[in-house]
Image (cartoon, rainbow over all chains, first blue to last red; front, side):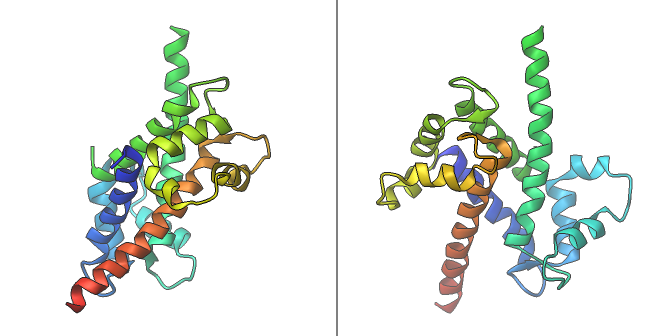
Amino acid sequence: MTELENCMESLIKVFHRYSIEDGDAKTLSKKELKKLMENELPTFLKTQQNPKTVDFILKDLDQNKDDKLDFEEFLPLVVGLSMACEKCYMLHEKKKTKK
Amino acid sequence: MTELENCMESLIKVFHRYSIEDGDAKTLSKKELKKLMENELPTFLKTQQNPKTVDFILKDLDQNKDDKLDFEEFLPLVVGLSMACEKCYMLHEKKKTKK
C-alpha cells in the first residue's frame, strides 16, 4: 500500500478501535471520543487549557445532534488539525530556506 | 508519535512531496495532482475508466478556480475516499460477524 492509502486505513482503524468499545460500534460516544483524543492526540489535548475541550469538540462536530460522532462527523477534526499542522510546517519550511 | 499524528504528518508530507515539484510549492498543479494520484492512489485510479478523472477531480476540488489545489482544497479528496473505504470496511465487518 502507498503512504496515502496507509493513512486512510489508519483513519478508519483508529476511529473503529474506539467506536467499538461501548454500545453503537459505528459511532464514538463522548467517552470514546475522550479516550481517542487522550491516546491519539495527546499533544493537541495538552495545549488546550479547558477541561471541557472534548465536550466543545463533540458539540462542534456533531452534525445531527445525537451526542455521538460517526466517521463522517469525525473526519473534520482530522482535517482541521492537519490544516493547522500544515500552516506550521509551511512556516518552518520558510524559515529553513531563509537560513 | 501516535498513529493518528503519523497519519496527519503523512497527509502533509505526501501533499508537499508533489506540490514542490514545479512552480508554486504551496499548491498542486494538474500535472502534480496527476502524479500524486498515479503514485499514491493507484488502486482508486485504476477503478476509474475515464482518462479525464484527474481533470474532473481538480475541477471539483478547486474552490477558488485557480486550476491548482492548496492543502485545504486537497483534503476533501482524502476525506471522500476515506468515507468510501469506511463504508466497505463496515460491510466487511458485518459479513464477518454474520459468519
